[in-house]
Amino acid sequence: MSENDKYTRDEDKRFTLRIEKGLFQRIEDAARAHKRSIGREIEYLLEQYLDLLEAEENGTLQDYINGN
Image 1 (tube, rainbow, N blue to C red):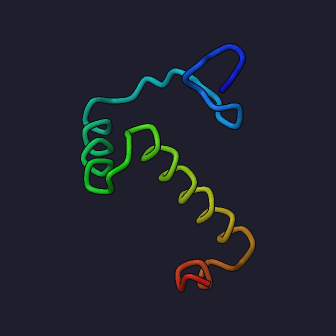
Image 2: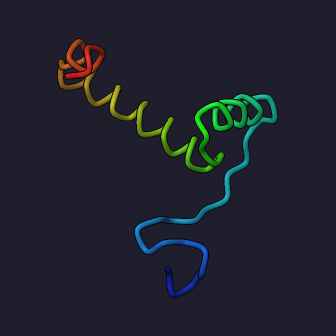
């Protein structure tokens, strides 16, 4: 656990996020469907999006889409 926050792992960073209520509801629904916390769902979605952008920039988008 972090020295400053007993609820945050050392490899994690805690921050506050303001988000539109409708978008939050969509994320909450997705998190429930995927059996994740809302925070972990947001993390997952951001990671997927950044991986997609990276694949697009590297010219490997088709491989990304095909799961390679």
